Length: 361
Image (cartoon, rainbow, N blue to C red; front, side):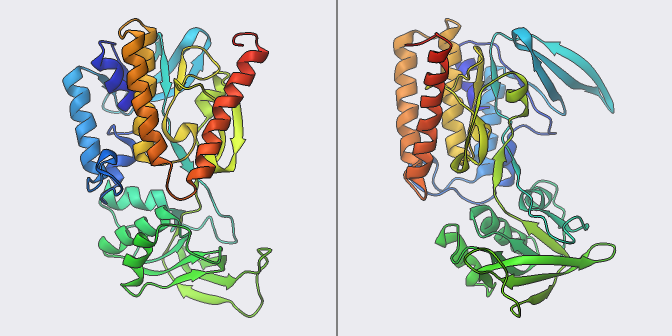
């Protein structure tokens, strides 16, 4: 939506395709207030940011197809879309845009253990979608796997929704997320088991208990340290990985970096991939957070408007320079140096690839 707004503001005709019943992605699950600087919407809830973006899209005449799935990108930037046309009705449509922005986000990592396929074992993001979007409580007694920001925030939101958080399990020797999130849980008496992992889950029709144990520095479990916890839900918050299927299908070159979440498309400073006309933004180009996705969307939208002749080069350069400065500020937090290095690697990898093709340098 951020890319759509930037391009549409300059006069570009924009179509947004979204597989969900509401545009806005993760923002409508984020009922907590953002923090940081006022430039980065400190004190504003994700759901309110989502509403602002939707209203701006509507004001600018951005067309949005909901419940519609982009199933493939083919030669000459053709996009096959399974579009919802009515109640329980869909039609396959071939869209032929001049430019494409892939902003497909990320998917949750799984943790595999005996019993991990039992009903009630789910990703933390799935639990968050259930409570904050669909208003459905996934269970009453929850164990969370992972103490990153997602695990901590979702645990607190599950507690707000009426669930009992039986504990948070973290294999690392210390909490992996921000202390401000962890302290809200510990003040409520919720135990955080650092240096523990989940061994297995038991249950018949759904999960009924989880077994956890301490781990050695080499991740092997320590016999005799097992604890059995009665639960009906296990929420796994083991990180995210970029959704790269469409980019890979389109022929975009990828790179691997653990600080990006795994494989992600390489791109230039305008967010354009190695396939001319295809741009990338948000978690699909490396897992970070909402404000970063918004800024990358602005970069892509501005670049597209300029490339199509709707913005002069000087104005586009000024807008992009400001966006990059804001991105620099966003990446100064925890693991900021690693994230910055990973993003710089994407830019260098793009330049090297294009030079090998004889298109730059």
